[in-house]
Image (cartoon, rainbow, N blue to C red; front, side):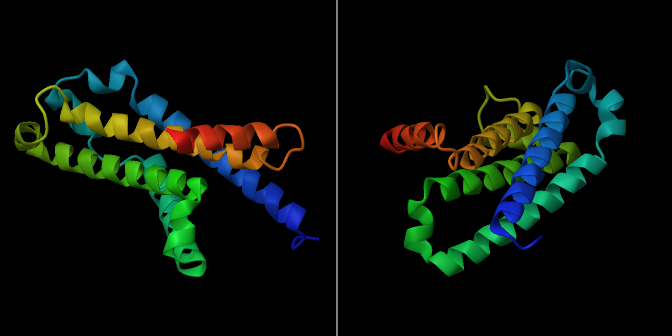
Length: 166
């Protein structure tokens, strides 16, 4: 029963929906004004990695491993031609780049980072922007579940064609 394709599909879909909800909660709770409008001294207590962030690192790490395996199985050309894989790569890169910026900034190196990046972007908010980009691609990849539906599937294909045309 557990090895039936429909059961595996449902478990996979529910798991990624739960991950998307948890990551959404994490990004929204991290991006609340109470968190990032404090002074450097007041924020020193929140400079540690949140347990939910560790969970998301594990989830995205597992997703990265599955994407690497899929790359070797399908071959690089076939892998990169699939738009879903592109969304997955951008989602993983956005999360890990955001995590890297966050850890870099909270180690006190943001003053050098501001000079090398851009003057208009606050590096302490850049990691939130990267997390939000990753979150957008995570929710877009949830459309993959809807693509098997008889009525909604063609609309998802139209959406994918519009994304590939841009």
